[in-house]
Length: 51
Image (cartoon, rainbow, N blue to C red):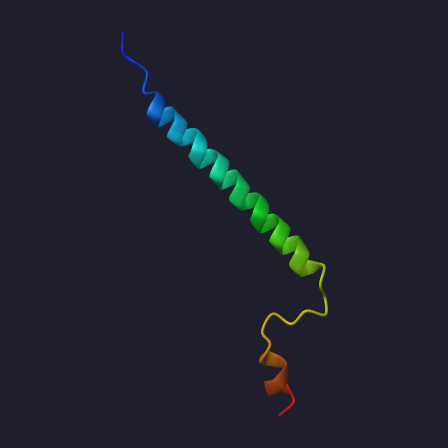
């Protein structure tokens, strides 16, 4: 019988956990940006429109 590779399994769990955390952070960031309608993503963009 083959010996289980616990290091590989642990690495896969860590990668899955990191991916889930990154997706959650991206979702929170998107919601926060959407909640700020007055926020200008590019500070210099409004200056060029006035010219």
